[in-house]
Amino acid sequence: MTTISSTVLKMASGPAASAAKPLVAAGPSEREKLGEVAEQFEALFVKSILSSARSAQLADPLLNNEGLKTFNSMLDQEYATALSQRESLGIADALVRQFQHRVSDGDV
Image (cartoon, rainbow, N blue to C red):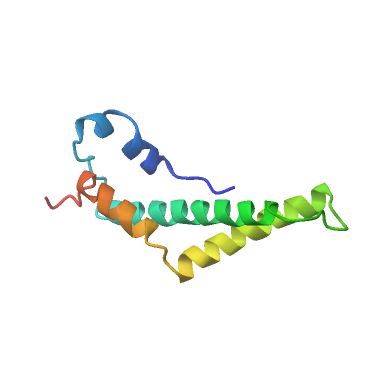
């Protein structure tokens, strides 16, 4: 399962979310961190789509066991990561645009 870093949790909840104040920057890499978190979220969203598509099968496969389910879950995660890195659905870009005003580069 993909974990989302604490940076996104700070932006989504807490005093910065309600007051809409910019976060205090630890360095010039805050915007890069925002982009990475947005890409992680996009990968998580794609994994959810792939998992839903896989569960919508018409019949049970011949070898339906816990090992196969675990393998398919890990395979969906790898597919989602590869797809989100190769092709953009625009979700990560939209998240960056939504939250970029809350992240400062330290030169503002």
